[in-house]
Amino acid sequence: MSGCGCGCGSGSGGPFSKGRDLVEFVFHAHGGAIRDQKILQGPLATVCQGCGTPFALETYLGTCPGCGGVHAVAPMAPTSANIQFAGSDYRLPL
Ligand SMILES: [Zn+2]
Image (tube, rainbow, N blue to C red; front, side, top):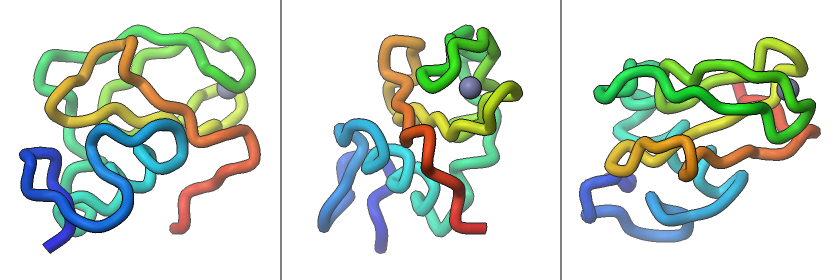
């Protein structure tokens, strides 16, 4: 099983990763079932770490409306301070 943010994760990456590692962790968590879920505590107001556009992160993984930069937050600690940015050159492997 892949990591799921509940402490049972394994391998590289995990809920305490930073930047792109965290984004990829959330992307793959629970076989992709986490990334499209609404954040339980509600949307997180943030500012794009790539272009500075303010936006609300509504799901655990989301993109900036300005530049498409990918942001994610760990499911067990969804706060604005914990939002990680994958980098301006990163695009989701879809
Ligand atoms: Zn942006």
